[in-house]
Length: 352
Image (cartoon, rainbow, N blue to C red):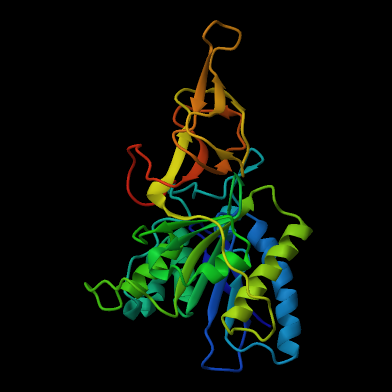
């Protein structure tokens, strides 16, 4: 395993950020190559734990000559966000300087312009330098896996329709309980990567990308960081590497059996007013239209001081907020449904 560092100068004197990059070099130039990163939102650590155990297996495979395709791993992709603590609480989702989500505003370029990502880096602030370096690394591979997690959540993934159903092997290997299919046109990391491939010829959009994959995997919730789950997920990702011919090994073939639905089929339950939320159902529950899901206590102890929220249609509760004091219009749940939501919302990603 080769270990190197990318050094990102800070925006004030005397500061810099170090980004460790782990590489395993394959012995078959015809095998697919893969880039895997974790903790782009610095407080989302299930992926970092997964990669710790996956690298143990990869080092063993390397010693036995079992790595066919090049593997690049960035286990802690956001040292800037990891240093942002505000009164003891980690603020790793948004850059405190620009107020921008660390997983938004990645450059939308053609793969032909990959080299430009790391040209004139002194012209960019540290957060943009980080994003450009990460994207440059990723675009050097055939397959990209970006490991995240939700708040309280089942295991699921965001996958561009251009990669489906070929990507069902990843969903099966990681035992995902749902897949959300997107059109791949936002500035999030995995969609910016797929954008570069789709527009290999500027102005000409490719709708299918055989042999490619760029995916965001949501490894359950933020608190699901423990050795048992991490080893289970590492085994799942190993199975995917075997299936795709990146490492040598034998693995039983499994099929993905969960729902795979467009983003339009995700109902987002939001708080109509701020208050204390009382949940009546939990993640993984299947609910029927009209079923009571949550109560918001807005004026404790007073007549009419609470609001009941019901399921807008039949579905599977995919995520739930861990907060119990919620703000007006705050997200409470995501529900995967068989039909498009009738709610009005912006196209693209579900969250900021």
